[in-house]
Length: 188
Image (cartoon, rainbow, N blue to C red; front, side):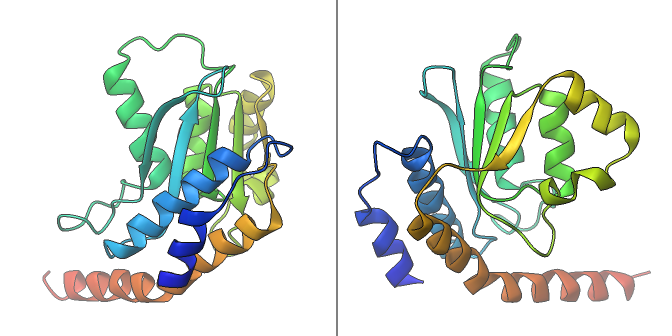
């Protein structure tokens, strides 16, 4: 992990790749999450000028256990608390180091954020590449809002870094979730 953290900390974003700066930042946030013992996913919310409005990383296993504290959820909650009436978010972009899961994708749809980008695909739980599996009404909402979903415009090196940062701790975290479920089942 240390090599990937060092890599993203020293990475020089390319001005020719639209999402490279944000992608480098979400990789740094993902590495921070991994060091804290939770899923290695980071996210940033950008306004129409590209300014960071909120950022965060996964916090599921920080200070005990909170199943809802995925990186995208943390960022949206921070933003919504600070901006009680956020208005039209159709010009905003959320960049995540990992393809959003079904829970995060649904919240992102309802948030109205115009563009959702991810640095690397999640072959295990990513929902964007499986968008056609969403309930028809949810698909209609995202279409009606003209939301754009897809890979970030970033370097292949950052895609590789995002995948490795996430993948190196994923199996251990998944094991913790299964153990938590098994111990809870024995409590009844």
